[in-house]
Length: 180
Image 1: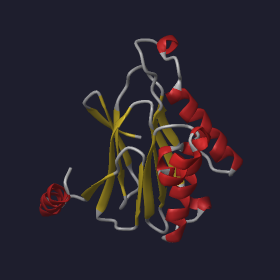
Image 2 (image 1 turned 135 degrees about the vertical axis):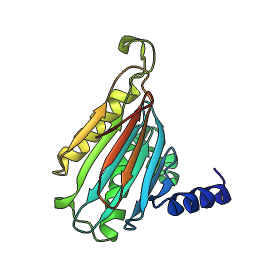
Image 3 (image 1 turned 30 degrees about the vertical axis):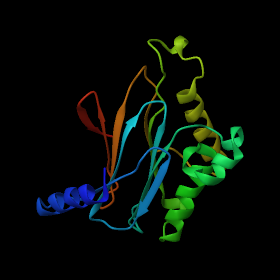
Image 4 (image 1 turned 30 degrees about the horizontal axis):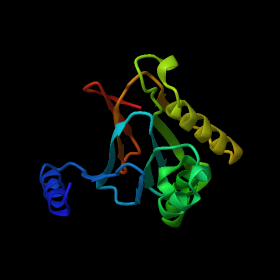
């Protein structure tokens, strides 16, 4: 969406009294302490959407990662750290810390990691499964727990919202919205 289209969407949302939606693209991260915002990311298939929120500092962030590790392309990892679990997750946390969040208060919610193909066995590269495993391992090593998740599935696409005022995460799967 163009910058002017995004500003029109923001103005309409504010006029309706809703939070302003800020889109997080593929291989992108956004953090904020503006409680009038909602962070949203679309088309989480094998990719992961990782939402974090500190309810005391009222800081949150959303990351849309594509691949488990940047070791496959160190130059790409340097240029686009949000593309990979192993570089994007530390970036997400550090940016939240910069706005006053602390690790001990962070609530982590995850969606995505679906299998490509008609059956799990048809997913040759298992990117979704590998993304989830890489995330769990990284968080575990750093003493961080996942509070809620909706991961896996076959050819499942999810949309994910983080409301910065409340920390609530909402998923839309097959046209149905539900809290995570």
